[in-house]
Amino acid sequence: MTLEVADVRRSLSDPRRVAALLGLDRGALRMRGGLAVCCPWHKEKTPSCSLSTGRDGTLRVRCFGCGETGDVLTLVAEVRGLDLRRDFHAVLEEAAALAGVELPPERLAPLPAPARELPALEDAVFDELVSPMLNSGRLDGSPTVAPVVRDLVARGLLEAARADGWAALPELGQGQAARLRFCVDVFGAELVERSGLATRRRGDLAWAWPRHLVCIPWRTPAGLVQTVQRRRLDPGEPKYVFPSGRRPRFPYGIERLRAAPAASPVVFVEGAVDVLARRVLDFGRSDGRVVLGVPGVDGWRVEFATYARGRVAYVATDADESGERVVERWSDDLYAAGAREVRRLAPPEGSKDWCDALGARRAAA
Ligand SMILES: [Zn+2]
Image (cartoon, rainbow, N blue to C red):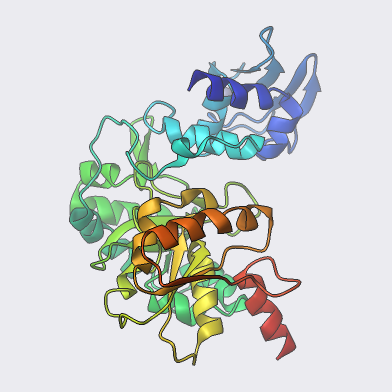
């Protein structure tokens, strides 16, 4: 573990690169051994927070305005609205994503949940707690959800997203804080914090990942919302996050399998967006196929293969190196779990994934 943390620290040791990756480079001033940026802890217009490379070769952060000090993980946590101690895994994942360092799969595994002071909520309680959040962020005509609606319309996914109960968080300053206060009023601060959706920043509860506006419910086979993935619309990284301690335990779309006839094929794709895209592409097809979204190629779990028992299974991962790399392993797992037949279904020439493929088909129509 220390080795990975050290790797992440080492790859984020250059003050200018770190400032650029975290969007702190605007108005930054060069100084000896690094640069000064506007401090993320205290609001200021003149940069007084110094980023430099320390004697051990890692990044040192020191603000001459408010006195905050730390290393690159402290900085990432503050900028991303995370608590370094409580959300350590999320901070590490975020820093690794910024650095382009791949964490070993067990680091990203959905279970066991990372150790935290507060126990994670049971699925039934989590489902109840997020239902007002998802309901008040319904993808209707309200101005607070407009950025998310526009994004989904542009990709031809709005109807499919609505059908699955996707929602939007208002932007910062556009009612985001009020939405949280509402949840706290109804459920109490402790439950909201235990949901992993909010985090304490100097005593105050705030949304974790405030820039990730798209809310994507991942369900249990019985249809309870087990976790809410969030996606950001701006170009920052990481694109997708899960609440702290609540990685998905089931593939996206699993709740549709129960109602599907025994002969329905299953199609495994990468992620929730591609599930929607694949469903739109499959519209009108009569084989009753069920599309299941694996949380990234590294999120595959052997037990997912059992959902294909007695069925035809399609491995429909992205047409890129990592997508191709897993075809053989998933196929082996699927056959071993009793799939009747396994076929590769690759996005068409020129498309990286199913969202691309849908875009290409819409452009041609
Ligand atoms: Zn400061």
